[in-house]
Length: 89
Image 1 (cartoon, rainbow, N blue to C red):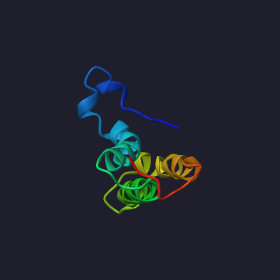
Image 2 (cartoon, rainbow, N blue to C red):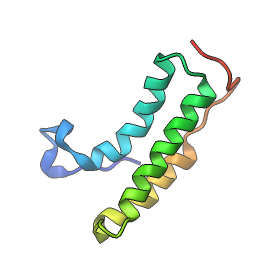
Image 3 (cartoon, rainbow, N blue to C red):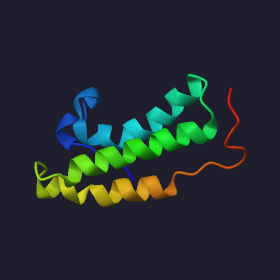
């Protein structure tokens, strides 16, 4: 699942909504490139999903933002890796 702010469609780097969904997988790729194992990279990505969900569920977030947390949970739950978790580049 992926959400974005339709008002930022021409400026994706300024889209905070899209960032919530794009940053965790980016974290995984970045950790792999830095030489971390697949398992460690996956763990870091999963933690990033949780941090983003905590932000959306905080008392400072609005109802519209809080509603996005379930989609982040879905993405987090469906992000998997197959094979040797200790493998690295």
